[in-house]
Image (cartoon, rainbow, N blue to C red; front, side):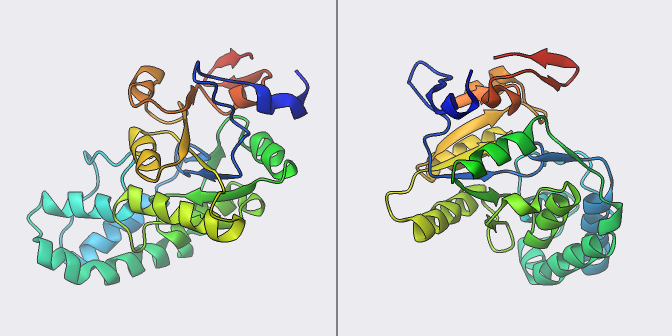
Length: 249
């Protein structure tokens, strides 16, 4: 297939064409990259100890698809930190998370997910606006993207510093796209969790689900994304290695 005819490639009977949007907003963890280090995790633990006085962890918290604010709230709620105490300490806790991740940024090990650089290059060459929409705090998210060598592709990002709900982050992403490109601009999100799909729908945007995180095809397709692919390699219509198996168009 001619790479520059990929906009005609479809993935569902509804005729969805993946390159028809004007802007593409990517989730970070599990979509753009997977981190193989404890930097972010340790920063969350440090914040909970220093601000809330509890020696606890995020172990056992269902954090995939959650925002940093939501992860902290869930971890602290189960050890008895009240809502009021959580909210009072939150600004200081977020400051510690950002500061600690920045201090240890050189230890971030970010493995880029299959075919991501090629997909980003293809979209950028086609004149698409690229951004990130992530549950990470802004400085944390950009540190990971930098560590993965992907920062040059993105014009902006929307993060969880002021929004605990992923849907609010995604809505801000759509607003920013329309501010830059006009009210008729079409936005497509790419994410690896059911929460990404649900948030994109609440933002009235298209969404491509990728199985490069912990969720499998059956789980993601049950939420009816516009397309679901094993990895972004499928968007390129060529062979790439992904999770030990070869995918072909």
